Picture (cartoon, one colour):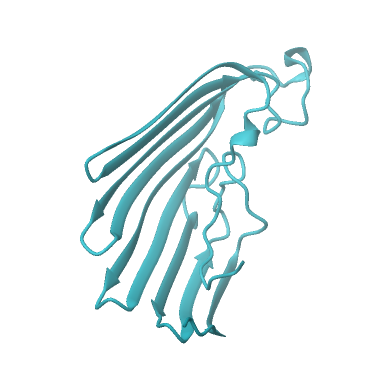
Length: 181
């Protein structure tokens, strides 16, 4: 169900389709949440469609290393602030992403959410960001959201995550009448 907020799938675990090894650990200590994934994937689809190492250009292998670190901190009034750092390394290429996100709730009926990430690849060092901002007042009678989204031309996240397209800017408003008795 659309609730007036869009978040990109920065990490799509099905990209790791033939793991040689993997490590996943998550936990919560007080108000801090941490997640870590590290894996080595063979015959990686992101290289070219599942081909043997012998068919790749010189100096390239179909092995890919995935690293994901996610940390967040919960604080007053169900608010949250988090960071994410991810990389996919496959010789001689790489795709790295770093980002900041949060949800701030205030005055009991207002929410401000944001997600800002930047990707790094060998080819694209500029125009490589994605930004999502949402402001939502809500009550027992309606839901409302106004938003701004932007994804730059060279944002490269599909090696690690899943998204449909880039090179866009959009803004808008969403309203839902939903009485709660």
